[in-house]
Amino acid sequence: MSTDRPTAIVTGASSGIGEATARRLSAEGFHVVLGARRLDRLEKIAAEIDGTPLELDVTDTESVAAFCEQVQDCRVLVNNAGGAAGLETVAAADEDHWRWMWETNVLGTLRLTKALLPKLVASGDGHVVTVTSIAAQEIYDGGAGYTAAKHAQSALHRTLRGEELGKPVRFTEVLPGMVETDFSLVRFDGDAERAANVYKGLVPLVAEDVADVIAFAVTRPAHVNLDQIVMKPRAQASATRAHREP
Ligand code: 8X3
Image (tube, rainbow, N blue to C red; front, side, top):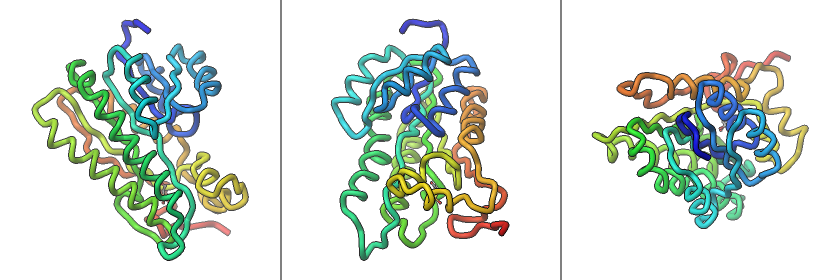
């Protein structure tokens, strides 16, 4: 996997924001290493962008170790893998949903970042981009499992900004609101009608909008750190307030 291009690693790269980011960073001149569980999808995308597909389950310590061993260098890490499961109230909380959200969003980000920090620093201009959510700043009914995980993921990411201060590594948190990907389909366990209702009557962000912002952040000069970028559709004011056309 030796190449002259700087390496960008994108987790959750088989679809949605991860796929769009992989494509965009490749267009910006990066050699992109795409990680996700669905290797067949990764292989197809990687072939199109001259990237490297590697199987990765961020919830599995051994999978993360095997993934990171195959990566020789790393200039950019995009912690994108994650997601929501369910929309139950706390009174009706599903512990398996909570565990999955904690494992993917929080511990997944921890595992990848911890393993790759030495390589990021060694690159001389490392950059960790973590895709959290407006759910890292807000709470809403039924969302506690997800908002708690996203708050924790954000806290982990922002802590690194101080702990690594003085080293050549930047930290950018991107906090999207509504982005139409398979996020809601996964959250509602494949219920397409329920997922479609989330974006009904408004123009949501698309994965490419988020990829655009990530590309902007990582292509600034090395002394410029964009700490937090909150982005929402124009029609969305908060996690609980959106304007919908009938
Ligand atoms: C997705 C945004 O509002 O559904 O991360 O939590 S929200």
